[in-house]
Image 1 (cartoon, rainbow, N blue to C red):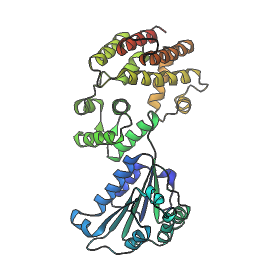
Image 2: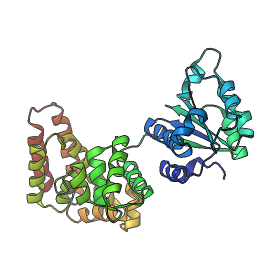
Image 3: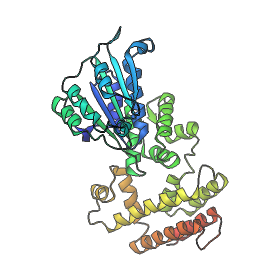
Image 4: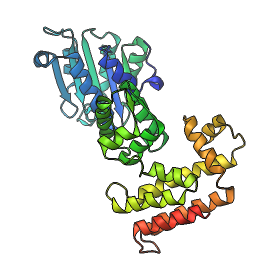
Length: 348
């Protein structure tokens, strides 16, 4: 199978490794350490049993690793096991060793003819691995794969990741449930995946629902930023103020700054939808950068309640609230500011 970086995702590799389909060489690189740590541990756990690890698992660390020794070890056959696993952790530190700047280039010769029974895992955190001879050899020989572990950004990237991981666990997750997790947990990937793992085990029908999340993660399915967004989009004042009141009485899980940021993103997208030439769901999806038709329809529905002038004013109110909540020009309580903001939005 050819190395195609653009098609390699955490979920696809996670599923592949769990199925016992291993590559000869894995290069796990990038800024998000969680994905790198999770994949290298999954390879170890899946390829070797506990009693096989004493003889067939070798861990190296970049600040002390000798690449020639790593290659020599890779060429040795496993003992009483189908696979031998070699993991080089913190490989980005190899270049910082005196006189070892280009040692990763030495791996090119091994990549040209790897041992089928060895799984070599290179963990390079913080940036992409800079060894053209090695990566070129991987591409030419199809002996391994490069996975880039990028930081997950809030918004579309985060929600796409949540859906993708839930699907890799054999579960479906609806838009509201996805938004609840994205809103409450954010880009803490370790916690996101931990909660999804738990929810996947608890669901009876492979559906992760808002009710399941409320019962097991501690997020209210009726009082959250997603519901506040929905109430404001329909100008439902009673529901909007009930939600803000709930936030005020449960401040630990509902900081007002998160609500302001979520509403800014929402109304910015509604403004884009209001000024778009193509008002079809597909047209709105392209303009706001979402893959969800359901989400695009929500933006369109909101444009029926707020005209362009109102939306421009709302963006101004949100910016003003953000500034005042930081103590600039106001010493009001954060939830008093949020209530004032909600009133202004409803009457824009």
